[in-house]
Length: 74
Image (cartoon, rainbow, N blue to C red; front, top):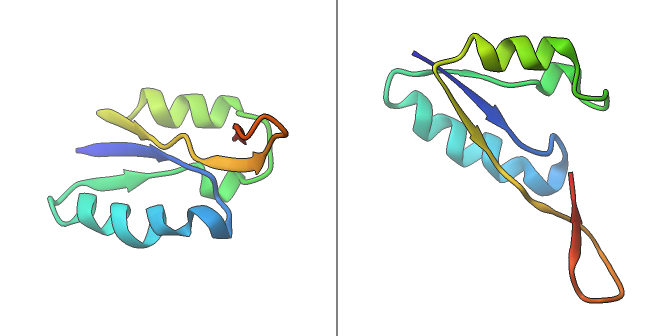
């Protein structure tokens, strides 16, 4: 089984890579990411990786704080 895990590939979201991915792998699941495509617009390659996976787990995480007190995301 393959699970695509989408998250911000930056230091702030490193906890996903360090905590969540090993937890998923503990269930004998292969984790697929787009980490090697970091910094690019969501490409056809990411779409293909998602389509070829059995599931998707995506994390919507905070980026910059706005004047309203809300946050941007990736």
